[in-house]
Length: 354
Image (tube, rainbow, N blue to C red; front, side):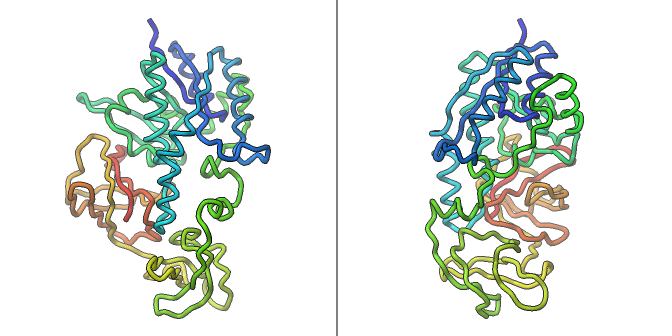
């Protein structure tokens, strides 16, 4: 009997080609379309789930697989969005994609797929899984420019043992070409960007619907007031756009938040010392193998997606927190974002920057 694989299909080209490749490899493939957001399902096109589902159906028809739609909106609101709002309220900048992968795509979706009799689940993520000596490793994708292991770093052994990433070995340009040659209707569809439930709308406008404005001062580290903000939640470390501070000289950047005084700390110049950190503390740790990395060893780490691995060492691990020291100071290290640690191509896991 062929192995049954349930593929998470979003309506984009990546998941469509993932399903196609598995079908060609002889697996019994079933598509699953996840609806994770329905708070503002209007015709304004911000989260065009209806069109995405139509695209999934068209792809499934072309490659000859069945599709099921499942609604995870309740789970998403409880496990991802509630934390997203709490983090912004606390002055941090969360990464909902990381949480969505660990809580929805590889938990709620995985549980549902197993209920359908699946042996494994697959997604269109650019990453790889390797089994070595009974241990499952999460590896970077062959296409370094598209690698998404950063967003998958919270997956554990049980989740990885059931996960397949058919695009891990190929490049994005090949994915488009495979889709075009196979006549898939989404071969030229634009990749979605940003957070799914926000879509194309202005981020501050979206957040203001859930978190009320709390205006306050913008100050330099020396205490000089240089402007006003509408709410600390609407700003992130390293932000340059939308500060509304005029004047001469170098551009202004957000360097910190004084939550107690409701003050946004801003500095002039991209390389201002207040924007550089040679060490960070991370909490809510998650290690792929179940074991923390060795202290004192040299690893690579990313403090944001699309960043080259920065040489670092784990200075200390105390239960749920660890200290990461960098060889070269890192720019705009942002509380709420993830620091993800690598040993060459192997993603070891990470935690939430404090």
